Length: 498
Image (tube, rainbow, N blue to C red; front, top):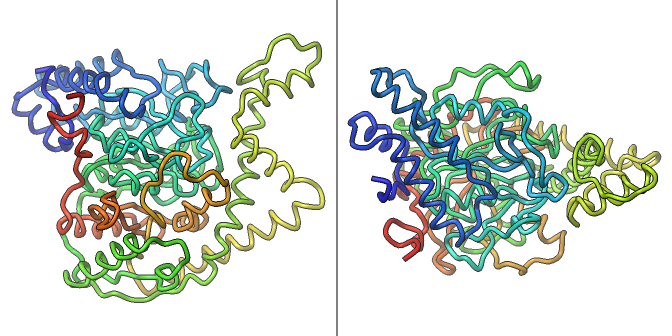
């Protein structure tokens, strides 16, 4: 059975097979680990595999089946899962794809990771990312470059590029990523998978290495809306270790079959005319709007007048919070320590200069400047005012609609090295950043392939605070039109490694 390929199987299909004793969870785990070993060298999604943990979790599932308690297991029982490498997990290194934490061993397990394990997930390992989540292409990783399974000459997006690529290549059924300004939704768009950034506060951030504490949120990647919803059911809830987390009793699978008839779907005309939006991405979003209207949704135009300022506000707030969060990596308590220094000052300077990569250093320096005396009032304080305006814009817009549909990315996946200018790279997240600033939930939904590029195209769904079930309902309606996302053809069953 270990030779069987479970890539592309849904969580429900795996669970049904386990319940029917068509195979065991141990066989699923071994098959998934074998596939990672065979296929991952072609895309470099994984930084570390955890075969012992995966097989131990599988044995627990098999024991429950033998003992007649399988029905008591969580929604991801026997499902291969993997985690972005900024999430702590006992028995693994948590490197954030940085030399600074290259040898850091996790002393505990992040709540989000533990919740997935409690739901029965089989942990395959830790996934590549942009260093400390600073990037939109996974090119800033200190260890390897992850490739897009749809075209290995193109980036998978970032910063959760490894998480998106692992699902697109059929290496894991569900993966977790983190999203500070689009780091789940943009790579999901590039790799043609479902990617969810929940409302801020739905998922605990405890144990996730922070980038921007007021912006970060953890969410799942999957090939199907239902698999993403099952993962959300496992993830959400109040965590006493994270004061921002909230109680949640929502079943995100409950309304997937209800359709969109009678729902009000908002569109933002200004976004569809924004400079840099590629024609095939615009056409895909416009077609999705039409498909929803054909299913009975009411399409309404909404305004987000201050959204154009989101990029400016984000690149003040984000670097300031990053500067604060990364100050702990001082070579004494955490992080790389450069040897041979006679005084603490030179040790700090050398360790941080060598431990952090160029993009991390850029954001640290920017944050340091923005928080300095005489500058703080001019930029940081004003950025927080803009944040309030953007948040109010979304609140008012959702007075007229149940969900907003807009682009997730201005373009399809670009080639490695194609974008070298940092400002141009930052614009990859132009449609996602405002949602992090406001704290609403957002989801990237695949819409097939672009007519010109042949690469994945997508739409982004945005929901009111703590009404994430709205966007799942709309996403399920779109999935019935466009079909479930496939594993990238080069890595589909029977092809990878041939």
